[in-house]
Length: 129
Image (spheres, rainbow, N blue to C red):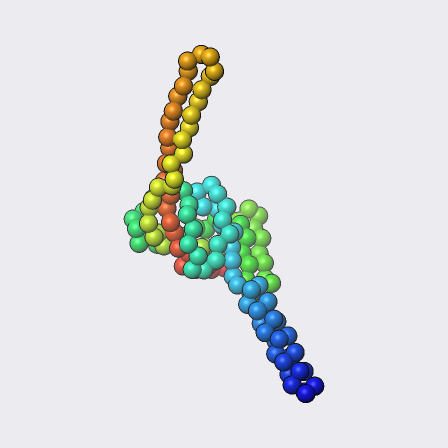
């Protein structure tokens, strides 16, 4: 009975170890896109401020601030030399409507304005160091 319990314990340890390795070995990068910093990984889809380009077009970002592949981490000053993040434009769309309402009490001043931010949905296709 002790033998089977020991085998089950060994299996649990190996499973947890593999799960932790898989979690931390993934490659990621911190990249500056349109004035904002994003942590991206391969096959991730993110929304960024409106970019130039048609849907389906591929684009590259060379302003990579940090690149990590498992325990190998490269930090740029200000950018990592030779590192690029390639992406594909999935779609252009608008965000939710934001209402801007200004009022001064007892003065009869009211101003209502609305705004919808334009975004681009991109899919990260690769990170090269």
